Amino acid sequence: MEIPPVIVFDGVCNLCNGFVDFVIARDPAARFRFASLQSDAARRLLNGVPLGSPPGDSVFLIEHGHVFQRSEAALRIARRLGAPWRFFYSLIVVPRPIRDWIYDVVARNRYRWFGKRPVCRVPTPDLRRRFLD
Image 1 (cartoon, rainbow, N blue to C red):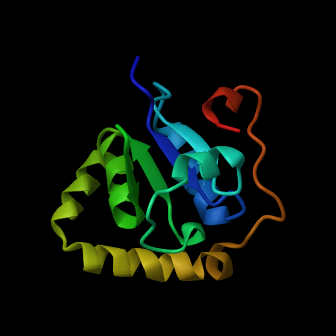
Image 2: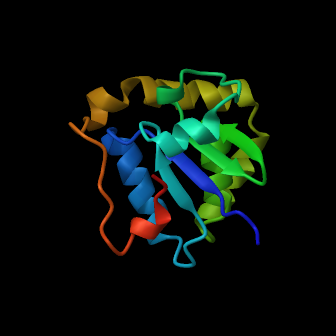
Image 3: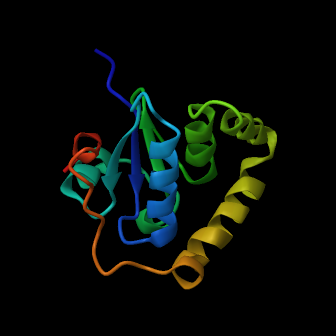
């Protein structure tokens, strides 16, 4: 059995939670699983992984035993969402330093622009199976 891809996100970030909602709405086959950065599951998944940026400043995609972060993670997630979102993956041809610079500007300002929750999200009972503890 193939291990489903896992999206690791900042559980207190409104933008990040909105992104999770966006993915869930466009992933009717429920291919993705989710773990907040603040969870034990995320710590286990990212344990020993060399991170190019502070963990709280990135979204991670764990897929086929590889960990992708920042713009590459976002583009790989988009690729799996189907049309028209999958076409954003073509931006992978933009050099990584440029993509990650844009990603980092948003990441640094996400709390100021979109706000922050006092606690991590609690999934609804019907979505509970898609979130790792």
